[in-house]
Length: 61
Image (cartoon, rainbow, N blue to C red):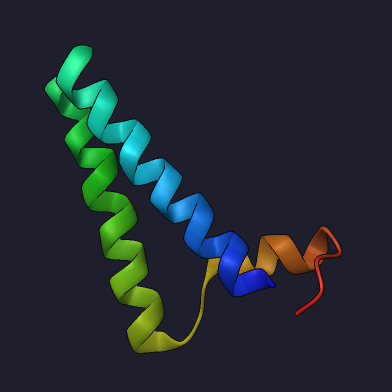
């Protein structure tokens, strides 16, 4: 369950930041890069901050 939520949040953040970069300010691409970097980092270290947040909110695996 957590993996699906994490993927949905990451995908939403990426799509929202792309829309904001296109219509508001190109600096929103930095947020897109930040999300991508965090996805890459979590695949290497097997640690994800969003997973910790969801655990503290009581979301089960």
